[in-house]
Length: 389
Ligand SMILES: Cc1cc2nc3c(=O)[nH]c(=O)nc-3n(C[C@H](O)[C@H](O)[C@H](O)COP(=O)(O)OP(=O)(O)OC[C@H]3O[C@@H](n4cnc5c(N)ncnc54)[C@H](O)[C@@H]3O)c2cc1C
Image (cartoon, rainbow, N blue to C red; front, top):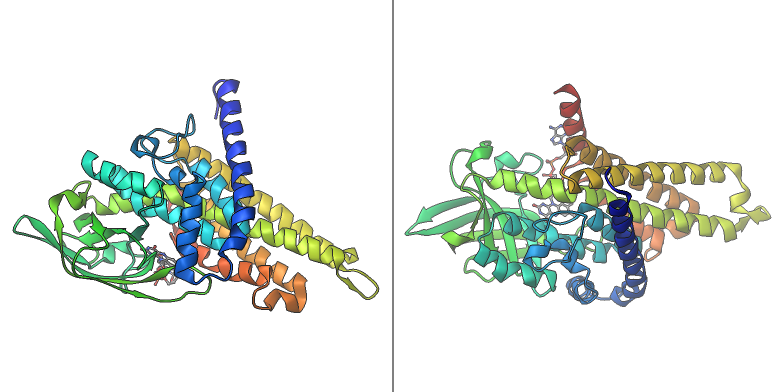
C-alpha cells in the first residue's frame, strides 16, 4: 500500500499486536479443547474466542465488530486481520480456526444485505459469540456449480416458504442461524434466480443430521420443510443471492489460505524438532542431506504461500482487483500445506500416523481446505479465466 509511511506503520503494528495476542491465546486455549466431544469443543472454542475479543474480528465495526482502524472500511471485515488470526489459530487448533471463521462466513451476508434492524439484532451476538453462525450454499446436487441450487423459496401470503436440502454445512446443529442460498425463480442452472435468506435455527420445519468428516469439524445436512420466513429475512435484493454468496467467498477465501499456512508452519516446526532430536544410524536424522533438502523446500514453499496471502489480503482490504491474487493464494497455500503436512508425517515415521500425534492431526486437518470455498480445480479455472479474459 503506497501513501504515507505513517499509515503503513500503524497498520503493521496493529496486525503485529493481533498476531502476538492470538499466538498466546491459541497456545493457552488449544489444550483446553482436547478430549471434549466435538460439539462441546466447538462451543468452548467459540466462547474462548469471543472472551478474548477475537470473534469480533469477523463482524464489521459498524455492526459491533472489532475496530479495524485503517485496515478496511467500517462496513466490512479485514482480510489481513482474519488471515493473521487464522494463521495463528490453525497453528494450534483446527477447531479454533473453524469456529472463528464460521462466524464471519455465516454472518457476512447479513452485514452486506440485512436491514438496519436485522443487522442490529443479529451481528452483535455474532461478535460476542452468543449466536453461532452457519453458511448454507452446498446441496447434494450443487457443489462447485452453485447455480444448480434447487432449494426453493416461494412467496405465500406475504411470507417466504423455504423447502430443500443443504449438505456439508459447517455448524449444522449448533448454529443459531443459517444464511441460505435458495432459488426464488428460474430453473436449475440459472444464477440470477437465486436469493439469500437469514434463517433462524429455531424456525419450524428445520431438520439437521450431523455427520463426521476426516478431522474435528461440526458439520451436517440441513433440511427445510415449509419453513416460513418474513420478508425482512430476505438478504439484499431478490435475485441477488449469487452475488452475495460470491462476495462472501471472495472476502473469506484468502483466509482459508492463511489457515493452510498455519497448519503447514506447525508441521514444519514439528519436523524440525523431531529430526533434530531423533537419532538413527548413530546420528541425528537432521544430519542427512536428503532430509535437510526436504526442510529447505518446505520452508521456501511455505514462504511463497505466505507472500501470496499477504498480497491477496492487502488487495481485498484496499478494494483493488483481487480475483487472480485470491485464487492463486488459495490454490498454492492449500496444496502446499497438504504437501508439507505429508512430508512431516514422513519425517515422523510411525509416530506420524499414530492417532493423537500432532502431525497425524495436522495431516487430517489440512485436507478439507483444498475442497471447501472453491476446490483447487475451481481456483485453477478462475486463474485461467483471468489470464484469458
Ligand atoms: C469440511 C467441509 C466443510 C464445508 N462447509 C461448508 C459450509 O459451511 N457451507 C457450504 O455451503 N458448503 C460447505 N462445504 C461444501 C464445499 O463447499 C463443497 O464440498 C465444495 O464446494 C465442492 O463441492 P462438491 O463436494 O459437491 O464437489 P463437486 O463440485 O462435485 O466436485 C468434485 C470434484 O470435481 C472437480 N470439479 C468440479 N467441477 C469441475 C470443473 N468444471 N473442472 C474441473 N474439475 C471440476 C472438483 O474440483 C472436485 O475435485 C464444506 C465441505 C467440507 C469438506
